[in-house]
Each structure stands twice: as structure tokens, then as C-alpha cells.
Image (cartoon, rainbow over all chains, first blue to last red; front, side, top):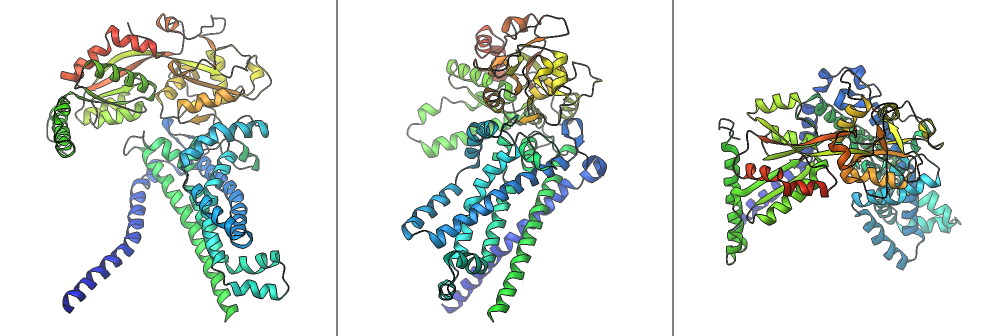
Length: 298
Length: 302
């Protein structure tokens, strides 16, 4: 009896352990796959051609700079919209709203997070883009900004949900201490609660930005997909083409093993590296913040 | 999977597989009422894939044919001419729809895989150039269109319209319509010409995207298959050269070849088709099927 129990224990432990390792293995496998399919590009296409500003793959123009700038532009815009809005909503739900309001708002925000991105894309084409064209007097409403707005809408629920959990787990004693010292409600939120929840809030922002940069369907439908190098602030209000939309639009069509195919995988590597950098920065900031907080508290 | 088998056996094996799947489905799900399902003979199954330009037409054909021939199953999917060609090269499809002729590289690659593409012209198509009804421009020459799409003209004023920026709309580069428009309009049919679309041309992933943008944006200029243009958009009359007659696209102007942006639509099979595929293709070229071509806004071949 005892023997079989320990045997079962052994199997269960190993199973849990292997599912823990599987995440690492999958990431490594995906990365190797990307490298294997993407790296041949470097021998097939000159660096000068890759770093040019013309993307027209059916005639062998493989300049990926417009795509990178397009993705960054849309993501930056989305972050500028989603971060203040998301954190503000989280603060309101966690700190200000009465209990009944919180119980309505939180599920609603999570419902918004479950909205399929293709539905948001339709909303963008039929409502947001015509409105923006008339309201801002643009030549066309299919712009980076339209994409940013909708991506902001996609990122907000993630940010709200994670940031609200972080704020909620700040011990009540912190707030009571601040009030006892005569701090106003705003001072308590801004100087005590938010800094105490900083690492969680930062994680929320990174997850939100991560969702925005990887989002495909919505941006493909509303950003116009014109591969123009977007460097000025004004480019936010003109059409751009993102890396994700390029891969999605062209991968289904491309001949397996061709140069175009390899370049699309190279773009995948670039995307992978960008989200890796975002994650590394985020976790290092969180790590440093935690160390300092521990120092202060001890 | 079976690289040594002759090419003709592979589709056969696929059919056997489908028979197996179908019969197991019938046995497991509706054992008692299997009488009705037994009429679906899997040897009458046709996989039809390719051009988005033709997908509605192919669906209408398939529907009509299946209603007249019980037991026939035709599965139609889109994805673009290139997607269809890739499927032809990999021999995973019975009939490929294409809005452009097969390229030499594609023929070479197909032959490497033991696939012998055979071509059928099944309908004709005209590309209509469309603008918002509020736009006063009614006619353009091919040269003007080329100069607009290559970025030389950026304001409607330069081609006789109002003082508005031109927003150029195009299908994605994987669309057969895109390639055809590039060759026929931007490069005016000249193979040496290396003119490209202006980089700020909006590349939209679907016909629907182009139509909805033209419908609500008076700055927009787009193109799409004649069969897909709704009545509430304005079609531009095109002249082949300066001083030539401006012609609106219609069935008669495409058939007498006076409308300059028109093309043939193709179906490709692996080798001379036999059996059910042959029957189906013969029917497509019949008067009954060509009637459907006209109903959908395309141009019949006969």
C-alpha cells in the first residue's frame, strides 16, 4: 500500500515537473524554428536591401524598416492611450468606486477583454475610421491612429484586470496609515497605494503592450497597410503597415522555402526579439523596484 | 507521404480515405438512418480552391451543379490565386481557380512534383475603377490611372476633379487582381516597365474593405472586379489612350474587347481531367453554367 502510494507520488511529481519544463521547451523550439526558417534570409537578401524603405515582396523589394516603424508607431499610440486609461480605471474600481459599482464594472471590463479582435476590426472599418476622417479632416480614416485607438481598447481590459488585482492586494494598513497622517484620498492613491503596487501595475502595462504589439486582425483591417516609413509624429495620422499584418496577409500565399517566405520568418524573429526586450526590461524594473521596497520595509 | 506512387493514384487514395472517414462517420453518428447518407458517393467529391475573385462564381456553379446531380460534393474555398497554385503544385486540390495565368516558375515547380497543369478559360472579368458618387470625375485614361497609382498625381485637381487628396486603394499583393492591375494599368502592359505602386497606396485584404472605404470616403480611388461593384458606387469610364473613346465596363464592352481592363479567368487541373472533374468542367463551359457567369456580373466566354 505504502509502496504504491510513493510510486504514484513519484509519477505525479514528474508529470507536474515536466509540464513546468514544457513552457521552456516550447519557447526554445519555437525560437529554433523561427531561426531555422528566418536566418537563410541573411544569405539571400543584402543587408542594404533589408534596411531599405521599400516593401514590395512580389518584385523582391524586402525593406523591413517601414514594417518595424509601423508596428512601433501603432503600439506606441496604443500604449499612450491604454496606459493612463487602464490604470485610471483600475484605480477607480479598486480605490474609489462603491462596492456595488465595482461588482458591475469588473465583469464588464473582463467581458470587453473577451471581445474577438475581428469584431473590433469591423467596428473600426464601419464606425471609427469614417468618424476620424471627418472629425480630424484626414484624407482617409484608415491610419495608425485608428489602429492605436482600437488596440488601446484591446489592451485596456488586460491592464485594468491585472492592475486592479495588484492594487487590491496592497494591505489596508498602508492606506489607513496615510489617512492617519492626514493625507487626502488622492495623495494616498498617488503616493502610497500606486507605488506599493508598482510591480503589479508595471506587469499589467507590459502585458497590455504585449497584447497590442502582437495583435493582428484588427490592425490589418484598419491601418490601411501602406508600407510607408513612419518617423514623424504626423505619421500617426497616415496609413502604416505593421509586421503582424504583413505576416498574416502574405504567409498564406507565399511559396514554401522562397526568399519571401524566409523574410516573413525574419520579421517573426524581429517581433519575437522586440517582445523579449519588452519583457526583460519589465522584469528587471520590477526586480529592482522590489529590492528597494524590501530595503525600505526592513 | 507516398512519393513513389504515380500521381494518378494519390487522388484515388485521397478518395479512399474520404470514403473511410465518411463511412465511419455514418456508422458512428447515424447508424439507423444510414440510407440517406449512402447516396453521397465519395468518388464524386471535388476539391475546388483558389482565386477570391472567382470564389462567388465557383460557389454558385457548385451549388447549381449539386442541386442537379444528387450525390455530388464540391467543396469551394478561396484564399487567392497564389494559394490555389500552391495547392495545385502540392497536388492537394482537384480544380484550381485563378484570376491570372499560371506563371512559368509555377509550371516548373509543379512539374518537379509530377503535376501537369492543364488550363481552361471559364469566364471573363473586367476590373472596374471605382470612386465615391460625390466625386465629379467620370473618366480617366489608362495613362492617368497609371500616374495616379504610381504617385505622380496626388490631387484630384490634376485629373479634372475637386481639390482633394487622392487616396489610392488596392488589393493586397497576394491578390491576382493586384498583379493584373499592376501589369495592365500601372505598367500599361509593357513588360520592361518597372513602375511600382506608390508606397502610400492602401493595401486592403479584401474586396469588401475597398468597397466600404470608397463608399464612405470621397477622396478614395479603388478598383475591383466588375462582379463585386455595388450600384451605389461610381464606375469610371476608361480610355485606352489619350483621345480614345472612354468606355464603361459592361458585358458587351468586355466581350468586344473595347474596355481595356479585362481579363480571362482560369481553372487548372492536374493533367487532362477525367471522370467527375471532366464532367464538371464540361458543364461549366455549357450554356446553363455560363448563364450564372452573367448573373454574377462576370462575362460569359461564349
